[in-house]
Amino acid sequence: MTGKNAQNCNNNYLKYVRALDPPTKHFKNCLAAFGVGGLICTIGQFLRYMLEYAGLSGDELAGTVSVILIFFGCLLTGFGVYDRIGRHAGAGSIVPITGFANSVTSPAIEFRTEGYIYGTAAKMFNVAGAIIVYGVFSGVIVGIIYYFL
Amino acid sequence: MKKGNTLFFKTRPRVRSYAAICGSKEKEGVIGNYADITLSDDMYGESTYEKAECKMLSGAISLAVEKGGLTDCDIDAMLSGDLLNQIISASFAARDFEFPFLGLYSACSTMSESMLLSAALVDSGFACNCVAATGSHFASAERQYRYPLELGCTRPPQSQWTVTGAGACVISDAVGKIAITSATLGRVRDWGVTDVNNMGAAMAPAAADTIMRHFKDTGTKPEDYDMIITGDLGALGSRILKDLMWEKSYDISSNHVDCGEIIYKVIEDEFQGGSGAGCSAVVMNSYVFTKMNAGLYKKVLFAATGALLSTVSSGQGESIPCISHAVELESLAAGAQ
Image (cartoon, rainbow over all chains, first blue to last red; front, side, top):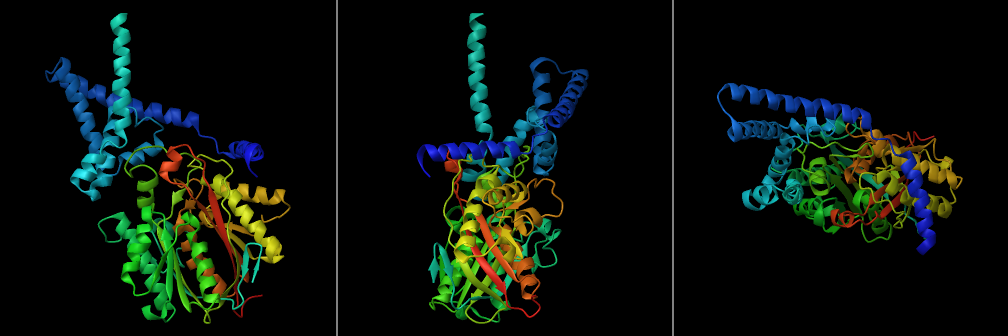
């Protein structure tokens, strides 16, 4: 079968396949994302209060909190724990800054076997590259809108 | 002799010996007691997962040759392939041996394709003993086709889990209790599935096509077989295959078994079951051949399925062309009813 006939036949098949697809558990995923994401943010907020108490403030404070969270994101990735959390956390462990740390560290570990330069360094932003590009891009757009408002 | 796309082997080449190596996760399942070697760690004592895959494959081949009471110089050719780019596991494994190597790529249907071609070589008299082998590794496949191992992302419920394991068998002209009677060459089928996580749905039409043509060419019915084995359709793909066959009035629901569906004991992260070239290779070369050797299964149709995609083609939005080759096996053991 070729041409239009095949297309119709394929569409029927695809419709049938879609009907059989096991449903993604949106409610459960959302709940897990809320719980895990919330927990990470709460830890961040807790760190913030503690550091504020220790005498940090302003940019210094925000930077230190991020650095600590990133450090633990990388550490847990290295220990092979973060992907297990991620499997059950919906998107809860991807969205916070620890998720970004994980997306940089995991290819760095994975491609270590191809050498430090062409492996670890070159492929480190395999996953995170897209996040950086579109993060910066949307930042620019929002900046321009903000300028004119 | 040939009818349609089905080859009938006059001399009925035998499966002389077989061997399988599997990972620790696979050991817990149905094949645990039948596999020759199980890996204690995924690295198999090597520095990379690719090397581990190669070592598994090479180990399975040398074990199969040894179990058949043969040495390197008795083997006329080795037909093998795997899932990695430029089939590196198979060709690197071939470095360890003295016999000629023919590289194949047929994705997850490599086991049936290599058995089919080995049987054809032996039947035509060009070879006395051929090795058919393939394998896959979860970590190396994941790296090539999906994301880094440690990336914390959620797997979709249609997805399957690449089997860590390798299987090899020696197809020989005389010795052995399992005969290969006929084989059907697969046609590439593509019904427009583009979802790379739903391989079962993409491959089911190819499997249905090959199995139905095999029935037609050989004049057999589904009831004639003790088992109709597919490679790695998974739970969802098996369901679709049964439906597709049912539509054409072939009822295979009672004797159809899918290697991917049965390989894991607990379906958890694996969702629809196992996949990968190693999936059917491990199950056939441990569980099925052992049972057939004992005469528990008399007649078996083995149709492994393969999805012929690459990360480039799926990235460019192409649909997934799939193939399935079928091999019919018959047990000559005395215990067979």
